[in-house]
Amino acid sequence: MAEKKSPTSTDDKRALIEANHPMISLARQGELVELSRSTWYYTPATEPSADLQLMRQIDELYLAMPYLGSRRIAVKLSQTGEAVNRKRVQRLLRIMGLEAIYPKPRTSQRVPEHKIYPYRLRNVAVTAPNQVWCADITYIPMPVGFMYLVAIMDWYSRYVLGWRLSNTLDGQFCLDVLHELLAQNKPTMFNTDQGVQFTARQFTATLENAGVVISMDGRGRMFDNIFIERLWRSLKCEDIYIKEYATVHALEIGLAHYFQQYNFERPHQSLAYATPAMIYDGGAGRGNCGQLPTAELTTLPPPPTTTATLHLTG
Image (cartoon, rainbow, N blue to C red; front, side, top):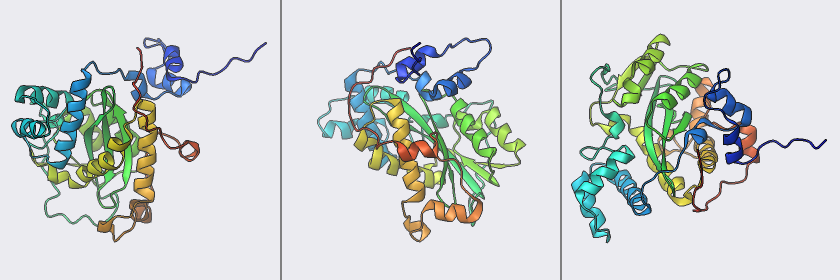
């Protein structure tokens, strides 16, 4: 009898997952067929290619000049030969999760029922690993569609402790990575912006139950969380914009490689040219900086840089 082959392609793996299975959760099914949650949920965007290109340009402008509003973004695009009106820019900013009026992600829009905590880091000396962790979400453009990325960083060492991808701004992906990290270690204080994912009761209760003090940036003050904002700039300029990952799986591999390099190989001037891992490990051991096992990281080839069209179903 011929041996049954394991599914290898993303489509084959997706076909094996039963969304409404009465006994096995989606997360467990994904583990069994080695398919990540973000890949299962991902569907290509229906935005026209011209809009996707504009969104890429807007993202680059926002990264370089986060203080620009929709009016000035439209002017800047027009100066590069893109005839675009302000209303179109505002619509695309909403899709991307960026706020046109001030330099904070649209994810920082408040929900009246959610408690907002004060910013507790002003004039506080951060002197050791795990004294303060911080988190933020950013938009990741792809040749077809886009994803959202959350990362949690140790403030003192700049070590990226964990990250997750999602195709929606649902807060579950933020909660997933938080639970994973708190199972290994915990900070004294946790700082975020006022995004609905971070002000949600499930998220804040998880921190409070772990005995962690919660701090939140002042409204519209992106520089209260400056270190993770710098991480986004480095990631996009050095990796995302250059490699233009064609699939979610390629993006996941690329991010795992990037964060591995960022943590263990990249010297930081602000750390006296030490790497984040040197500073963090010297204090308390390391977190889990990737969704891929270390063995897989060491055996995988560099992620592809193709700009081929993404074809996913389901």
